[in-house]
Image 1: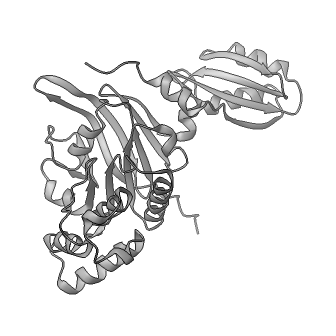
Image 2 (image 1 turned 180 degrees about the vertical axis):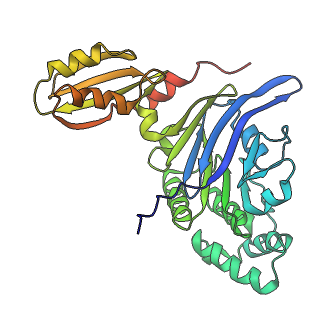
Length: 322
């Protein structure tokens, strides 16, 4: 019997050449990225980059042209009702009815999604347990701290069991403990099979949380891929560290003479070389193959990681968009 083929992760979000303008002023200029299922994807950029506009479009609150965004294969313009059934949206401002109790607030939204009384009770208990707010069930929302209100807002997104969560700056205004606890809740949601799309202007906040990240600046995507690739990325080049068991002058000469390779730099602290190359001219696999074909005894070949702040500054422009 043939070995089973590895399954390709489901494409949950497919955004292609997304454009949007406010009164003639461009906010999004051909935004393109993909998000796979059961992952946490960070959407990062400076203030005014276009993050909230993108989130509102994904949540079907703003209308782009057709065939630019698909959610679980549904076009968000033509099939917006099908999209809304499968997403939960948490905006960057708290939309909470402060005079209600926690239970009343969640029960209202569960009823709006068509859940029966019995279903609502069970669902509310479940989402309160997940967000560790079960003990606050009968308290007025206005009496809760900012962090607790954020948890209730997240619980509201979950009452109809969506497969995709769209979270716009969910950690804004939270103290360090509340941030850490929120991130752990998001990890648990991923373990439950949810896909989380989280917007932030703080890359370091998402570094250990996200499987992949898209960086946007002034309405333009500057990077989209894994966090590891981001830290090895600089413009249109990549830097990888080639660790070897002994000096390999033949491999170094071969790499230096290869089209697309920018530089091969010997690192002082160990038997290793930093190989920098143009990604549009040569692939990572080909760089490694050339080294192996020229007598390099390779121990490892891994991204030459930069600091997060350095990567972010390389990809974004200074100043505020006008």
